[in-house]
Image (cartoon, rainbow, N blue to C red; front, side, top):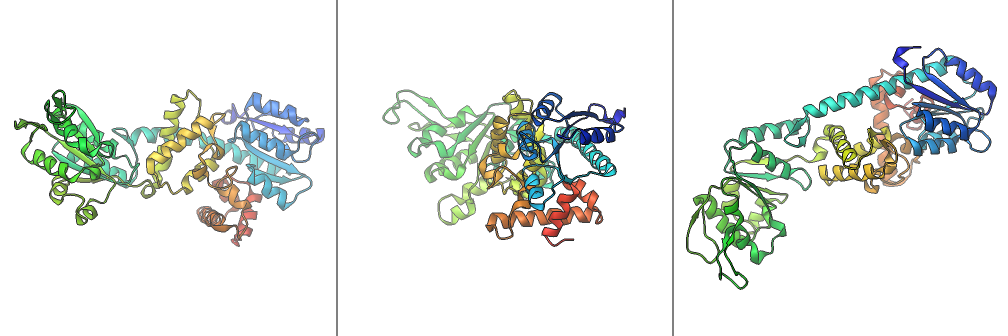
Length: 462
């Protein structure tokens, strides 16, 4: 047996004993463990027992046809490569098979050389996926910084800026869209700064306006109705450490003036008290709002803005760093696999395509929630496109990427048109990278050559 193929298994399902014998004999020298079944139900039992990397199934069979077998295998493990064979080839059934998740669709009789070549390709792809998982894990470990994940130029610049600012800052302003990790950047600044005290968080959008000053500066007994005892404010509580003011754009103007004085003088007055109290104050403020625009509308103090923004750190949108999506995905898969006690090892190719084409308006937080949802829904050890939230997988949740686009008509509306454009770009890229070699392009796209030829013809790329 070929040691390189040790542990690899294949199931062949065909109601013709002659076909089973021929196919099994043709693959006996490949080193792959081959299991055969003339009954589709028995074949599916073998799939469940042996968990093969490849399944070769006839299309026309009694009891269950090949498409039903395909659907049940996709439900069990969408990472399995399924090839359908038929003596009654039609382009419609080929597209339908590929749309439903088949790796390829062959016309009988299958030549021995074609069979061995294609199985060899699938085996190579299986090994490449395994190597990619290992390398992705190593890359992930090297791309983590204080709880943040990324290797894109934008994230490396962010990490560098945090390292340089952390030892020296008194005030920092972190800006960026919701879900970009401003809280993680603030936590990283605290972890790397010389302050030995607490990290205290105040979400300014969650505080009632009339209680803001009391929450921030504290109050003395009798300062207002209900003030039955002295209260320590968050600024005093954070003295010697760092106060993180999240969503500072929601702070009332009157409180902004008192915060500015506290930052300038390192002193505060509790509400209802004349006594000044010294504090050792480091402040990190964060906002998703456009503070200069708010200043122009007299909704934010200009002097406080310049005080806070002595150093400004911006967290990039996920759409600006798409190369980090695979890293972040693997990070969240590991997180939720552990949280839910599930043996989830990754995503199918079509699920990865769905993630790649989504716009991510909610940024990293939306990606985290999407993977958390998918991990909860996944039945096996692989997340498929159907496990993803509806807004991520788009219309037609049963398919993704190339498979969905292959079925979309030329006038299918905005969604179909965008998918068509995405598919065309993938095809052009694969053909350019392969130097026009269709077999190599098909391997890059992880589809069969027949499927590739159909798509090239459909897009006028032949």
